[in-house]
Length: 218
Image 1 (cartoon, one colour):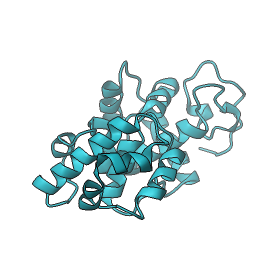
Image 2 (cartoon, rainbow, N blue to C red):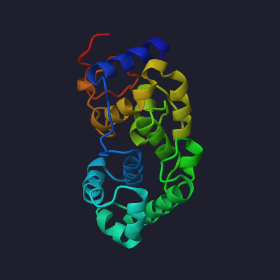
Image 3 (cartoon, rainbow, N blue to C red):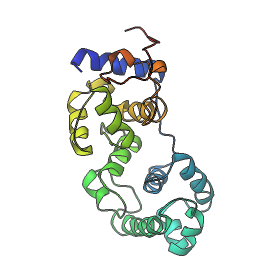
């Protein structure tokens, strides 16, 4: 995919969704951090159900730390790996209290020091909470980047680095959300909806499931 095609790709996604947002429910950087930690190997819908029970009771590092690991597990036990996640969330709350005055840090290095927070989670927080132009590559973005030819790579880090290089600057802040949503609802793992895809004719996927409909003109 060349520079002109990439620009058209994001222009069309922006036209359909000018202000994309995460589907996780949150009202602070800390709530988003907890939600993203819970979202590993879980759906956003499932996380929202759990945080809908948890956050009205405890939504600060001190409040969740005071709950303790056992009581926290009761709020999130509907989510996969909830025992490990509860341990990590209590651990990150302790570190936020001890080292960051309860504030969520705004650097990748500091975020990755928190239990349960890896590079992908850190990138989500930096982008969504703090408006930094980062790229958190999940399974959806990895698939879209490779399948379409937007930014092929053998692993998530390679795709992340490639996307950061090739996405035009004006689209960088929102590109993470556009690509996730496109992968989640249109460019799905099985039976991608090529006939409904707004970027079908720009896509390099050779096994399209339907002819391109040309929903949006270049």
